[in-house]
Image (tube, rainbow, N blue to C red):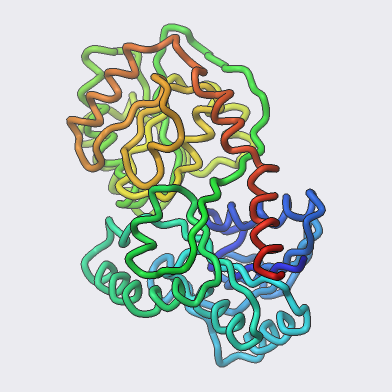
Length: 373
């Protein structure tokens, strides 16, 4: 089975969609399910040269960010035409696209239509884009109801990354939908506490408005009088970092909040997550938050906003759901988590089984076989 996967970004660019695409490529091949060819834009790539790694190939389309986090292809270039020709010559059985609002999906859809190939679309979103300035929101909404709708309706099969995505997808398309959770390959690790008297909270993600980190900082400031040994670690980077640092300074809690910037996967899994007591995900919008799954696997108590498919991850007491964009609800959830310190790891085994990497890859392989009959 040959799969051509069109994605807006690919590692080393950092983000959720590109990480999922990379893991799919690697594990689809390691499970001997077939071949994978990735087609991505040049934003975040080290060069314009195509390359091969872990058994899959990456073709790069020249592009630039027309607005922040929205790559636009240089379709007038020779390399653009060359990449599409290479896809044609590879003769994939399946064309796979990710997230409706990127032009990589539109290009992949056109390729599938012209070459009469079956297309599987993986939708990571659970609603119209939130947390943007009004111009970007207007652009995103117009795109969703025009090109985005076409991207959905032109697919032969849609994969939702959670049950929470389905109502949103059904607004745009009657294409069959199957839910496939993200598969994770997370090592068995032991919790590491440097100081048993301290309390460590953490957030991992991009520092953008959509993630609600400002709400977390505001709620956290109210905990310090009751918990003088509490500390918040903010891991990640983004356009809002400077504003968030100013917020911390204005609240005079610099000694209680650490901005650690981007950390690699190995550091997160083996050092940071095992040292946290409580992981907080205050996001305004999610498909299925991987960091929440990883935090439960690392036996943290998790406080997360009830958005997208988050509620599907666990129903144990070490997983506390709160309202999005509500400082009071988030504060109440964190206080509830603090009262449960010591009851770590209740969800770990269940989550490990539910989000088994091998099981998810085989689900995709089965979809491809059915489409290609």
